[in-house]
Structures are given as C-alpha cells and as structure tokens.
Figure (cartoon, one colour):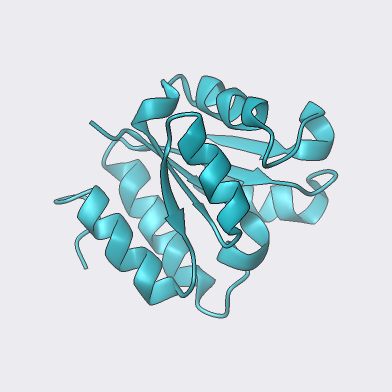
Length: 131
C-alpha cells in the first residue's frame, strides 16, 4: 500500500500549473498520505518557507550532503517520513532521478505535465486523488 508522496521542486512544482499539484498534495496529506519535498537545491531559503506548509518533510540535497540520483537521498527522505521506501511514490521531471528512486524501491512518476502527473497519481492513490 502506498503511503508516501515525494515531489521534486524545480521542474515539477515550478511548472506553470504547479499550484494544482500542491492542491493534490494537500488532499493526499488530509487523507493520511505522508508528503515530502526532495530538491537538489543547496538550501531551503524562500522555497522552504513557501513549501513547508504542504509537506511533512522537506529535504534539500545541500543540507543532507547527498543529491539525486544517489540512492541514499531517497532513503533519507523515506526515513524522515517514517515510511519504507517501497510505500513511497516519487515524482520528478528527470528520468535519471526517477530511475534511481525506482532502483531503491519507490514507485516512480516522470513529470511531463501537471495533468499527466495528476492522472498518474490518481491511479496510484485511488479514492484519495481522484481526477
């Protein structure tokens, strides 16, 4: 059973319709899904302040010392959520980052558009993120 949702910042949440993804994150969180932001940015700053209300965990590679696509950063994120990696879905616009997450056991979704990502998330979290 999937219980975690992990999203990249730049390229996913910064997409022109990224606000719709934040609505989905809020909905998932309200339904008991643990949520995390995972970014290769050096540090949080303004992005941390803006995104923190939506996520249970916020991970910036520059702060934890490992970056995507290193396997350890996905494990760190799942640990911060208190979940096994196998119960987490990871969304990123980079195919190599998605492949790395899948290699450690996460379910991967490659973001190409907000609508496609929302459709995939609705299939992965039926009854929670219905289209």
